[in-house]
Length: 117
Image 1 (cartoon, rainbow, N blue to C red):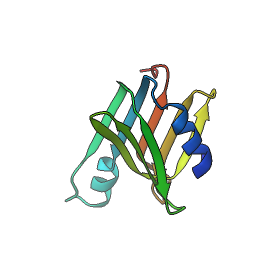
Image 2 (cartoon, rainbow, N blue to C red):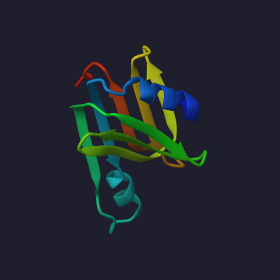
Image 3 (spheres, rainbow, N blue to C red):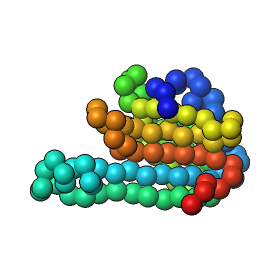
């Protein structure tokens, strides 16, 4: 993976507009948080192959971390803390956020075909 290039990622996000796409979204700090602080709560989200259609996509940030939003007719998909991206075979976009030690904190993937499970 490489650091997010705003223009490249924005263009790829826009290529998915008004198409049926599959989304993978996960967040985690549970194992990391409880390992460092026994009083920390384990929290996380995991959803894979949710089929959505969005009509607007935007990624913004300060050069260190980014947030991406996908606007649907009746709601949003949103991920914050993204730092890196990679494109697979020109059709899948992976965005991820890693902490200072390189551990995964958030991931948002978008594809026109289902992800392996």
